[in-house]
Image (cartoon, rainbow over all chains, first blue to last red):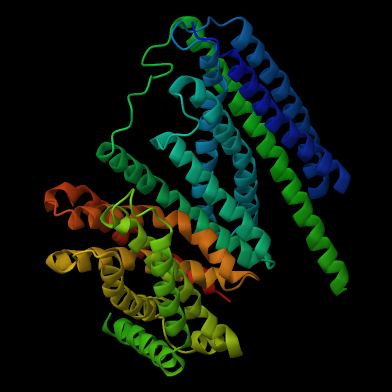
Length: 34
Length: 235
Length: 226
């Protein structure tokens, strides 16, 4: 079996960063405008 | 309840659901990474599939909604449809970006190359360009009615373009055969893997709906406030 | 229907006449085209790749960018002196305005292409005469496609601050099907391949033209409502 787990970790982290950042931006932004 | 109160209610509820979506996504992560068997031939990298494919599904779903909503707007001229379309574009953009980021990270270990001009990835890339053009166009037009009309025109044309790009890529590939590529997640997925994939599909769809609902509420709130300000300025 | 065409013709004639009098845009587009073709010569390694391999791509990139230079001109003209309002107040249908603009743009882009093509054949030593008929057909079909969509996009882009930048951002994704088809067909023609090989591309191009010309005619009205 190939040893490519590093790519999995990278992809999973990248995805969650993208989604989390957007979710935070959206909810914080909405609250800021009040 | 005044319109603003109703929209504020929607904003808070959808924020809660966004939180729920994030928690469920964590559950997907745990299930995919820990409780799903590793594919023998491709190794652990195959697991990127459980994040990449549902993201792609949402990206294309969002684009479809954008196209339909744009067309309906031109018929009904209801500004809320325009706000909904714009919200869909923005949220869809996030998912499309995730597809374009996870795709190459998956491609490198599996296909040996970061990028390949295969039909799905190329189509996703152009989806990304079209939605980007849509969002940029919106920032460049200040009159709300004109912005809504122009956005709708671009949304409809963009939706029409998708099948043509697909055919272009398909014809291009049959004339220039690409190296034989492993079919990750092939025609039949063993039970545990299929269950993880379906779970992921459900979670990503829910997350998308929550984000869209929230974004739309924000757009409506901004619009209502802008109109109120304009009326006050006139008075 | 006849009135529509006649009105479109009148609008196109006006635009072409205006352009012919000043000739600025046309000459600039020509100079640009010649320069781009010349620069492409240096953008390749002549020992590694033969000109004929790269030629179709070079030709179509050149045509595409020259066309984009000319497309904003169509509505840019009207913006000065708010002449578009005058046009809209006249009893001419919006469709006629669109068709007229497309026609004028076709004349503009077509003229640039007509001069660029022999120049291209000269610079890159490509034998175009044996395949001139089919080549002109391919050029015409692809040009109709990207001018139709480009005219619509420019009617929107021209109302934004950075119109010259906005137009490519809006238009380029839509050029993938026609330009890809055109390049593939051009390459087959230069290589002397039988036409049957490119019939799929031809169908794609014709299909694109039909669908997008129809869609743009229907949608144009929404871009100039006042």
